[in-house]
Image 1 (cartoon, rainbow, N blue to C red):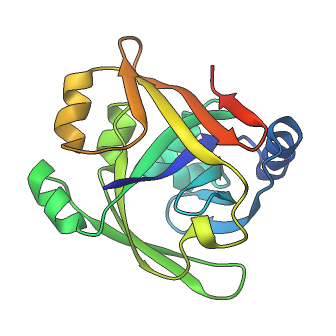
Image 2: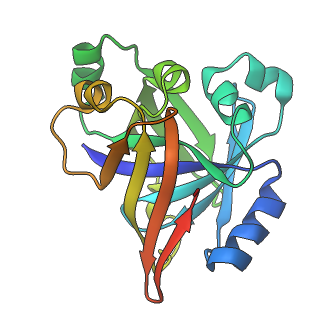
Length: 200
């Protein structure tokens, strides 16, 4: 398992993208609309990982969706969730008693990006747990454009270390957890000009 992406909630995609670029030098590209979730996104490609600027675009649809509800609860400009990539989602789902579901969205180039997910409801109900994703078709968002010259150096979480350990199992992801109100405390990115922090 590997850290796949971190979600940053924004109230408006265009405004959020401008703020991210002006403040951190991180340009984003168009993502797409998530059918049934009431959300849409923009992507900051980082190669093997990416940042996902995510906004609610249909409140009624989002309210009926676990993922949409997670995004709606987020604070503008702050990390609201994260995803772990696996190439065997069925094994993860079986270990944790989760149900996997298939999803897709249109890509700006006309292709279709498809994936399977599990654990979104649990991640929404129990921060800072991540949800799990297995990519099944299309270009991974982290490589959907020239990767930005930055990498995720650390994801600092607050919550119960034992619960997170049970959820993830053995891993070597750049994740730390400290006691405190459950959630994501800070996202640290390392780039050519040093480290930047989003969250604290």
